[in-house]
Image (cartoon, rainbow, N blue to C red):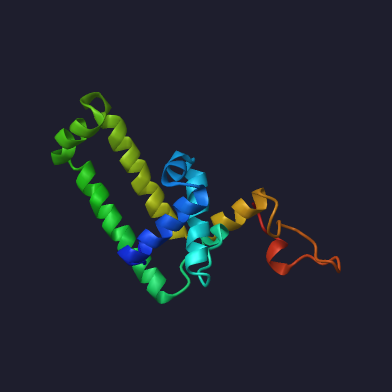
Length: 159
């Protein structure tokens, strides 16, 4: 909804309340119910909008611009994590997480930085394909074609 003007957001929100029956009924819905109702209101407001395929969320960058934007994001996130991990931030971490939990919070931030670096270095296409295989979608390793042959890229695959 960030792309909509304030007036358009108000129109969509009113439509969502109408679909739910009232503003109170909309507010009483679960988060999933509100999201579905809001999506229906958005589609009725702008029929040309298409909600994205959630399976494409973890695909790697598709263009040089995507690659540059992801590199900027990783650099900025790493810098912010570095600020939080700095010894000067110990008092702030204690204020947020409690003095007894500072070491645990630092460990969590370190793990996040490590995971971010790993995903940036290795991309996420492979992780997406493995996840789809676990869900029973996508081509499994050593899957035969209808003619009985095995694709060349799968003959020596180890998963």
